[in-house]
Length: 206
Image (tube, rainbow, N blue to C red; front, side):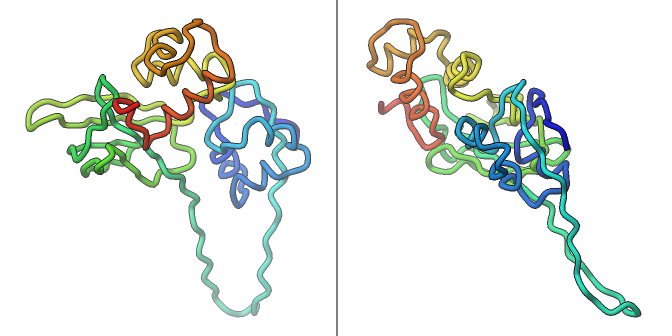
């Protein structure tokens, strides 16, 4: 199969499922993707324009009697959608009722003590929505673009993470994170931003 040019929102998880491969490692561990593996180790994050070699699907054979019926169990691959829900000050919205929609499926429950929601999702899911209740009558609602986050080594990836955390500029984040305020991205900023973007991190205590 020729090289595939990644479109916005595609992931290795989804590409593997769409091409009948067992899982994303069949792509990521292929020798022709050695360079990709160094820069894109997270199977849920690619960038539009990345080039990915997708190996052919191998035919799986099971020797069995001809004149008999046989049952085969096919398991659809899934990924985990992990969300950290926080208020404008970066404090976790803990133990709050939520309603989550992933494509056409709906789920409900309560965030955990760290404001975390975890839900199995189809590997090719691309959109959804989340409503979290602040009290019995007031709720915040977000539109989810699943798999659309660019890598953190790109300007667009940094901008998206800052926006999700509620910062309108690099300088604003540098100031709150205790970094030298330069307004420009460097490795120190990326490392700090990656730590802040950890779903388990409570920014209000940082």
